[in-house]
Every structure is written in structure tokens, then in C-alpha cells.
Amino acid sequence: MTTPVCTLPSAPSYPRTYPTFSAYVRTRGTALMRTARSLTANPCDAEDLLQTALAKTYVAWDRIEDHRALDGYVRRALVNTRTSQWRKRRVDEFACEELPEPEGVPHTDPAEAQVLRDAMWRAVLRLPDRQRAMVVLRYYEDLSEAQTAELLGVSVGTVKSAVSRALGKLREDPELRPAELR
Image (cartoon, rainbow, N blue to C red):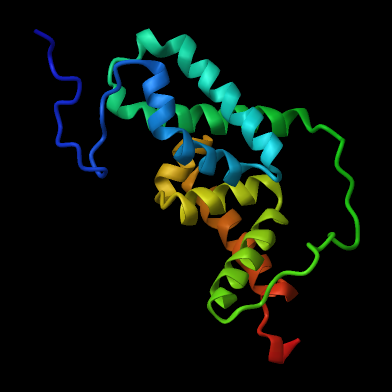
């Protein structure tokens, strides 16, 4: 007779335990990719970042006592890996005056909200890496200032000031102004 794998109700809001690493990745991979994508400027970097974090998780799988806390473990690995990349400061990106725009964005009535979300996301991607990470963790991942500070290894005051500066930049972004004000 086998014991049940999950001791909590299977409602999506409850953390679950996972019998194997691959079961965890199958179940949570999409959500983890969203987090990785939020921390990087392009999808390829997000895939690399997630793969590195999952490799670290795999190596530590047997040492992780509480499998209900795996998302936090992987999220921390994502942030730590991304922070290490910031510190290395690769110089393969070049600043330019104008960003390339996608060709022919369809404008349909129900898509106006999506257009605004896309514009907001592009504006978030233009923020400096550290500010972007803090905005993503605070507003996209819905973490508190204290949780964001702990995850990034900075003070709460640093999170507050960096998020404030980032929000100021977003308010001034010309792409986010209403069409009648442009």
C-alpha cells in the first residue's frame, strides 16, 4: 500500500508536495518561466535563467525538506543567478535612441486593454535591471516590500526608493501617455 503524495487538498491555492523533480517541473514550469521572463529582457535569457535555477534545484532536491516551499527555493535561485549575471555586467547590449517596434500591431476593440498591458510591459523592460526586478517582484509577483528586500538581499528602504524611482520613470514614459496627450 502506498501513502498519498499530497496531504493537503488539491485546490490550486494550496502548496503541494511532489514525488519527483520532473513532476514538479511539469506542474510548475509555466509559472516559473513567467517569473524568469519577468527578470530578464528577452525570452532566450529567461529560458537559460530558469534552466540554471532548475539545475541548482535538482542538485539540492534530496536536501530540500519541505517540498511545499519549492517555488520559493526556485524563485530565490532565479534571483540569485540573475544577480550574479548583473554583477558580471556583460557588455553585449548596446543602448540606442529608439527601440525597434513590432510591425502591424492589430487594433481591435477588445484588444485595447491588451495594447496597454503590452506597452506597460515594454516600459517595464526598459527599466534598469535592478529596478525591473524590484517592480516585477512587488507588482507582478505581488510580494511585499519586506519580502522583495529579503529575496534581493537589500534593505526595505532600498526597495522603496528604487520602486519609487522606477514608477516615476514609468509615469514619464511617452508610450504610456493617452493618445490625446501625445
